[in-house]
Length: 227
Image 1: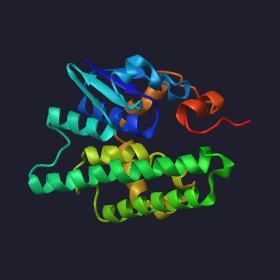
Image 2 (image 1 turned 180 degrees about the vertical axis):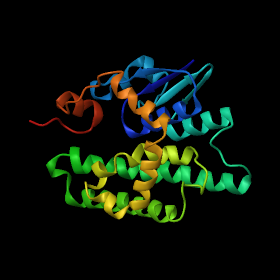
Image 3 (image 1 turned 90 degrees about the vertical axis):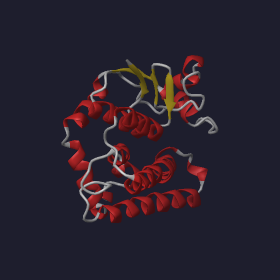
Image 4 (image 1 turned 45 degrees about the horizontal axis):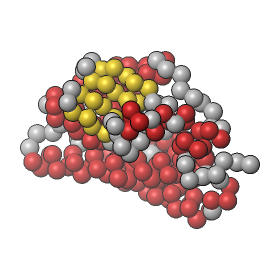
């Protein structure tokens, strides 16, 4: 059985969706990053980068959410386009999420919600601009398309779903007003039974909710805790 190391943040949740879509049996293993469990030696042996998610599937260990999506889809032969041209498009958009949507949305969240007040307006403006720019690219691509690769649901949509759920927290409550195609895709995936099952992980474990000094030290190790 696959061991799935997770918390409820966007990247683990996209893997949870994929596992549920594929109907694969898995054991969810909570890693409470606000308590610093990602730095435990046992977990470092799974993911030396001390991030979630990661999976252990027999002798295979895979970390980074988009690598996991690709690994699972290729293993099962599902949710992947056929042919070199379509595969090239799939890889392009999957990496767009991996290198653009995810990192810039994550940094936007950090500077908007968690960075010290003296972090600087330039950094905040930079990440808000880049996060919005990446989502706008995705919004334009979805015009006239049911899913990221056209009419076929794929792991790219699962990758987008993980972060699209958080758009109001990333860009503000009004953000979906300028991203109707992204909202349409999100609603379409949310209606799938697998998405409901993935969201059901929330009831499986009580992660630490407080962003106190302990959480800041564990989440943002370079930041001095508030006095």
